[in-house]
Amino acid sequence: MMRRLNQFLPLLCAIALAVLGPLLGPYVSDLIVKVMILSIFALSLELLVGMTGLVSLGHAAFYGIGAYATVLGSGRDGGSVAWLLPLAMGCAAAYALVVGALSLRTRGVYFIMVTLAFAQMAFFVFHDTAVGGGSDGIYMYIRPALGALDMENRSVQFYAVLGALVATYGLLALIRRSRFGAALAGIRVNEQRMRAAGFPVYGYKLGAFVLAGALAGLAGFLLASRDGVVNPELLAWHNSGEVLLMIILGGLGHLRGAVIGAVAFTLLKELLSTQGLVGPLADHWQLTLGLAIIAFVALLPKGIIGIAGQLRARA
Amino acid sequence: MDFGTFLVQCLNSVQYGLLLFLVASGLTLIFGIMGVINLAHGSFYMIGAYMAFALSPLFGDQFILMLLGGVVLAALLGYVLEWAFFSYLYQRDHLQQVLMTYGLILVFEELRSILVGNDVHGVKVPPWLDGSFALGSLMSYPWYRLFASAACIVLAIGLYFVVNRTRLGMMIRAGASNRDMVRGLGIDIRRLYRIVFAAGVALAALAGMIAAPMSSVYPNMGASVLIICFVVVVIGGIGSITGALIASLLVGFVDTFGKVLFAEVSGIGVYVLMAIVLIWRPEGLMGRKT
Image (cartoon, rainbow over all chains, first blue to last red; front, side, top):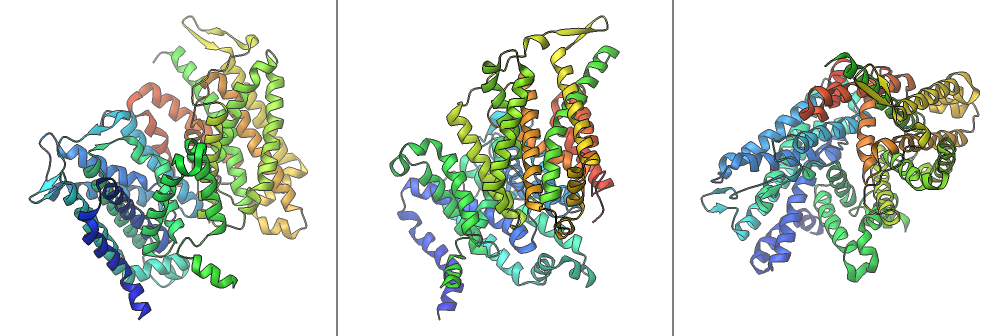
């Protein structure tokens, strides 16, 4: 019984959010939308790091490209979700295909550095050239819409983002059970053996990389539709670092870990910059955040999900 | 582009490349020997630059003396950091190293903001290196940049000598090619780690100090250098000092001439270079096949 309940917990949480949605105040509702977008972003990286064992430090590039594609594609009269969403995911996936094809020729620590470097290249494209308004970024005139699915409407936005989160989570849960997911897990555990067993390892990894890029593009699309503005900071490397931190903080290897991590990280950042809680340290939240990161990774290598297991192991 | 401009740009390329080499050589050695990916390495460059800003009023004309003092301080910092923090990272996987050194960057940047603030500061060129000399009839080149290149060349030769001609260098090379074997031969690997790390920090900080009068000091200056140095390490091949030198100079030329010839997309040049190297030799120019 408990096991079954545990299995359906994510779905129950989603239903609870859907029911509670209209009751929430604008500030809380807006914060939840932001956290849900970050959760999709974190889930897309979990596909790479947790499921395939590829540590990418350049994932923000695909997030940012998705967001930029949405704003650049929407024009003065706004655009339709029906083609802006595929555009955002397609652009992110296309860049992921190029970056993946090159960076997957390397492994381990090389892979970390190469993904970081290619993300920085995308950052420079938007930062230095006039493509996306340079370092100031660009505004969107009208948010994307499709019939009743109008992102200008706050509550529609809430349900659209919630729906996207449920869909992403469901897709990844299905992939984990599929043959594709099993192959990715095999590559994570022992790539050599998978290759010896005749699996086209490079193709599987590239597939995961492109899919992760497309899902990050989805998160970028939602972010641009929420904020109505994009700037190069979206692609900056500290965003790649933060999303990596989220999935570790929650617990690597669990889909819910990515969501828990996104929630926990956002809360942690809010708490550390709240004057009432930490006093004058609030102005220096980067310092406390940095120390908190070091402490978390040192003490809780298995993330928040792993706390129970760690306690049990100690007892 | 006339010949004078070409010559000046070549000098600039070499100077920038050599400066990158100082940072990248430490990064590649620390990874090659200790297996630690250190994102905070760019912070040591930043710390060096701010040290130059803080120390130059104290030392006045004695620029060389200030560099020496800064190097000693940086090496001490590296020694203490290795003892207090990095020695715990060796047993961790790369993912955790990435995150913990990422946390360290935030700490360093915020401490910098608390101690010095977020303004951009200039650092004075020492008076005996001020001014420039004529290069042909139209162009001139600042003495200080020439000094920077010369200092880097002296350091690079010194590094080459230490790594290839001394007992310590032998241990370092052995450590980079097979860590476990070195440990098995009864060499005090922890002491070796500490020395290499302190030397890496000192080199990065020295690069920052030398760069400070040319680039001024500003927040987050470490991050951009770090990422370019990753590119250098990937191109050169991890653990190879020679590879780092060749790659630094290549990156220096591509970046400098990219800025002159294709100003708008200059930021991309070095990454295209990296992509080409990845297609051609994914293990880097001087890297070993795995």
